[in-house]
Image (cartoon, rainbow, N blue to C red; front, top):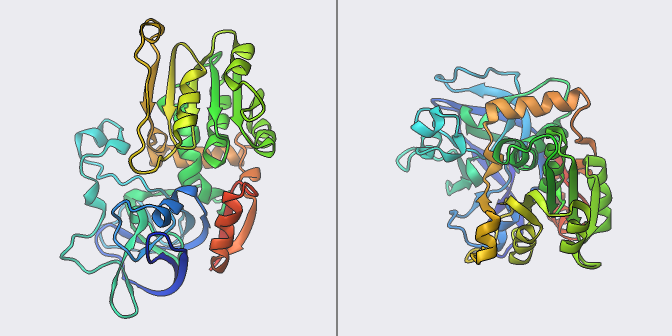
Length: 364
């Protein structure tokens, strides 16, 4: 099969012919119908996070189950599924409490070093799977815990985005922050994840949802996703603008970029008792600063890291798909364009240039 691989740090994705193994145990073979270009996959190219190379990028996929291993119980051939990078065993104390993003035994979903690799090049060289998915390919072979069955009425491109940007952004508001009706919210950085944080806050009944970004086109998109107010942080005092809207600052502020300057802005717009949620992936070595002055102490503000929206994918992915089908969750404007696997690097250039929200590979 054809797959887009990261061959070296600092390079581009390259198309190669890859051999994929048959499913064993609780593994599931999926025919990929759509694969989203998530910004975090660029970290595979731009930074050394210790992932063995070559590696198949991509993790935001939807498709149809082609075959299942002998121990699979929750899926069958023909099921429409969405994959997610959350790897969880389902049996440890954290998993049993519903906190699957804090699984204590994530290695349970991958093959051991003594086992045959799931993916290899034609010459037998092992190919790693980014976050155990490797979705820039015609097929993926993953553990059943990383898949969720979704509504047959949701289009494949839209469904694919639920597996990362939607669960991460909307989940941060719904599951991590537990935004309540009447709360005030700010979202710093309204790309794919930030737009879904806006959407999640709206679903929770937030009174004010303030989108903050440098790009007016993204701010306009944020209004479609439920932002009540927008602030261009490059045009003036963003903190002052938020204080002017809320009077005291916001209850919840979400950072979806991963830069020190935006992490600080997220804290600066908080009101008393507010919490800043750091969602964006920062480059290696980045340190987030948190004020510890007497004023901060009395304001009782908090800083919270967020992974994948604290999501339980078996519950949340089908829920968001149903909400889309019911017309209650915006996904149509997430899919900016459909492209082929061969256009992957061009698609990422468009993402970095702010030309698209999400490009989705639908031709392999």
